Length: 111
Image (cartoon, rainbow, N blue to C red; front, side, top):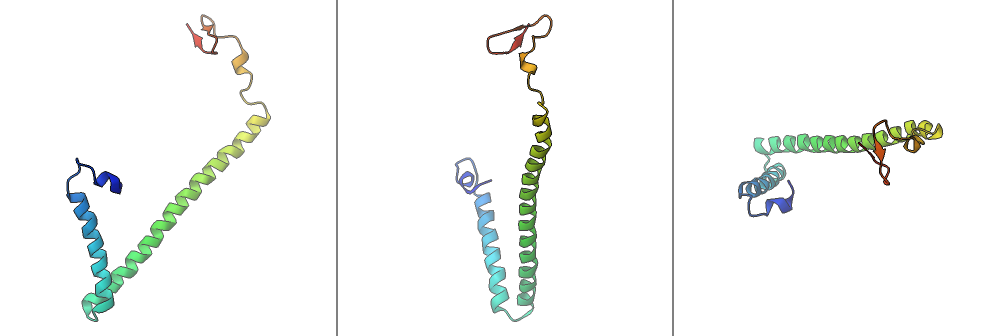
């Protein structure tokens, strides 16, 4: 769900209220942590630390997944190099079509 999809006519006001409420809650926890010396400020500071660490872990997961995808592309490319060096499946298209099939001018077999 993107911000532009939240602003269409078929979406009710609840997603926008949820985003606004989350922003207000984040601001209020930060405000309590900085301005309240009592137990609420103490808990707010603990929440800020916990959510900060969770945010960093989330970033690490996203970057790890991105690096894994790049590694998968590199691995597939490296495993394909010997196939290209040996000729792979080249020359298969030049063979005659299967028995009972004909080939059109575009190289497709049809019955």
